[in-house]
Image (cartoon, rainbow, N blue to C red):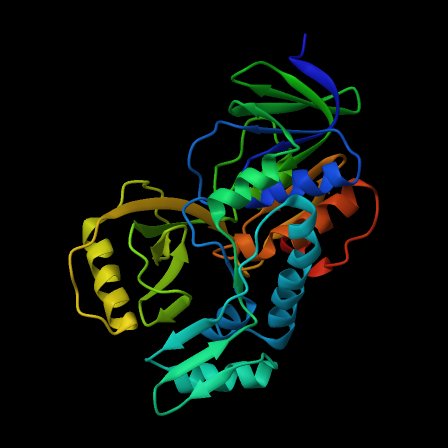
Length: 336
């Protein structure tokens, strides 16, 4: 017998995309269960950036891609109020390096910004952030969470049966929000092929118990952002790496870059270094939507999981309810 059934939807994965999707479906009146083994995931190894302006400028994105990130940011306003996630809308800043190039890109894309050429400072109020720990707790508040690992799935009576380390679970529909994990046993061939396209990317950050800045400051090789009573230093992007053990050499380089960005003299700090692995698709956009009868993906946001969470959640929820996606560029089938 299944551990429980009668749930409309099972979401596998409790990172930002999984929990945002579960919260959105719950808001719409669906019965939702999230299956996740617990512990720190990639969404917790993050600064919680909701930063369409800086991300668009740094990656030199197309106007269409930048507009999508702006829509994703805008989706946070109502979503945060509904779920209890606290939004920080303070100033974001870039210092040094190719600051003139970034300023020109922001201007071309229509993002509000200020540029002090003499000081080498670029600022914007278009970028927001959340505190990942608070946000993950708020998103899971009204969602049933089964602390277990999903190991396999199979079709069952028009729905799905998911084997977990706590026992089997049955659901009408399943959402895979499994990050950069490999495909589990029993996935349809098409879904397995799509998951094989996702590249793991390790990101390393440092949690500091000192408040080194009162707003997000970015620059060549590092950023520093407020986090709780302290701050976070980040972040590496290491494609193909899956190790969750921080690399001392990379962390030392990132710390030196952070001091340079802040324009401060290095001094001893108490730092907890963390590593997490996120997933990226070939085009840098997430896979969000249906891949088969009652099977949906919410995967591969690269480093923009927190930015894209509510947008992906809305796309998946619409397709769960049988409506067409408002963001067809995110459809997983674009890679087939």
